[in-house]
Amino acid sequence: MQWDVVIAMVPRLAQGALLTLNLLFLSGAIGLCLAVPMALARVSRRRGLSLIPRVYVFFFRGTPLLVQLFLVYYGLGQFEAVRESFLWPVLYNAYWCAVLTFSMHTAAYITEILRGAIQAVPAGEVEAARAIGMRPMQVYARIVLPRAFRIALPAYGNELILMLKASALASTITLLDLTGTARTLYAKNYMPVESFVTAGAFYLIITFVLTRVIAFLEKRLHPERKEPVVIVG
Image (cartoon, rainbow, N blue to C red; front, side, top):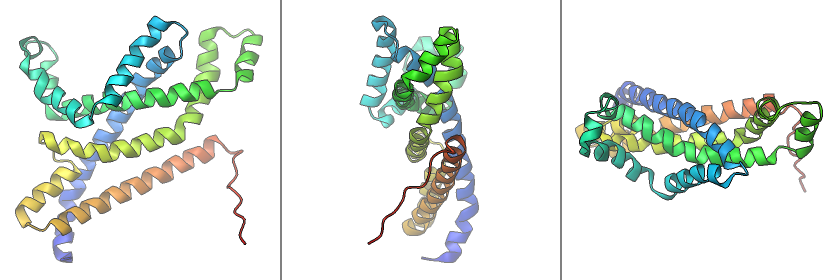
């Protein structure tokens, strides 16, 4: 390892890390907003209403993220109707194509996370809310969804970490995220170990911070939870 080269690469990689974080948090937020109504439809007793999120989840979980990214970035521009639509100023931009693809992809996984969390809400709490006269929308807004978000937080944090690593695919459509910047530096200095080990260190640092934040939120939202007792001997 040539440490002078590593130190010289840090500012460039830090810029790439900022783009990676931008993609991660923006797509994670949009994906969560998309997932909430789909999760509610997913647990609906109406088969027609639940069919739409079922198909959506099946498609986005059943196809590779790279294929989805190429379909959005390269595929949509093949249609004249898309090129002449008001969406084209967004869809011809690699950044927004990545955000759109990552958002739709993670929304499928978050939908299933929230579906399981909604179904895990204790029935007694829902019955108690109905007993005091809450309407169905009030039950969901004040009881079910807040409880489900607390239950889903660990899995949602895990999904964010998975999306952090998956965001490296943005480099395949010309974006200079953390991985894309490392590849560019390697193409200039022909030092793969220094380039990619330093990029990996950035990913580890981001992952560590994310896990600490999620752990802090879990502790604040679940103060009744205790650390597991470890029996030695």
